[in-house]
Image (cartoon, rainbow, N blue to C red; front, side, top):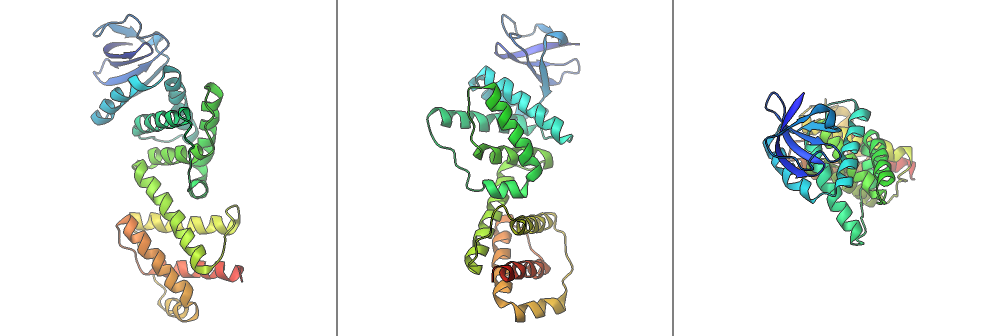
Length: 279
């Protein structure tokens, strides 16, 4: 199979058209050297190939690539291939642009000696443990193949990009949901006057409960409300019941979706177990 060159981005990266006239990104050592637009290139000369079907993603990637160091670009492409292998699932093609853009920004900050902080790292690890483990491998791969030393904070950011690509949701939306859960936990600790060990099973259960609640709200999924239990909880555990409604309000404002009353009931029971444990 041969490809017709549309644009030469640098010595190692080309934009070309396949026999079906679809635009593809071609990567290979020196494949752009002394090439001409409209000339053809054979499959045997190509190391890596991927397709960006969305026109806006194509344009963003074309603008971004000339500013990416060639060695860094190659390791980013390898990282995305690693993510694809580990997830064994559909990845939204947006990850090519989003992850490349993020890592270029990160590298520029590191080069200028600016510290990278991620206040929601532990929340991300608890919410997306599967993506977090893959992101750990990605950071290790990048650090092994470059002169960089990406900090652990980057694992959290990359995990969000992986989840975003897996569920086909914008990474900013995924990040906002992760931060929301972090804020909810801080409010729980403040109101109940407790400090929950971030490595404990209680913390993992709480995060999982909040995540599943968030996912139900996003999907508009209704849960049955046990009315008798609701009245009992309201009378027996007024602090936890009121706190659950404060949490629901924050969730509703962030997600911009209605929340069914039953969610507060189940959250009250969870909060009461936490409060009981710390007495």
